Image (cartoon, rainbow, N blue to C red; front, side, top):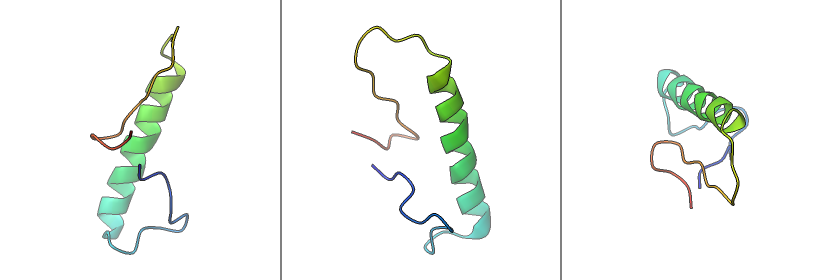
Amino acid sequence: TRGIPFPTGDPSLSPAQEQAWRRRLVERALEALTTAVTAPTVFEVDGEGA
């Protein structure tokens, strides 16, 4: 799981890559917030996750 280990930006990514990754993370979070769940559910970002 990647999470956000670098709150001020991942030094291994270019600024454009960092922005794109954070955007995907926020979009996935919004999707998770609007998804009805009835059992434990794992939401992944681009194949990252458990």
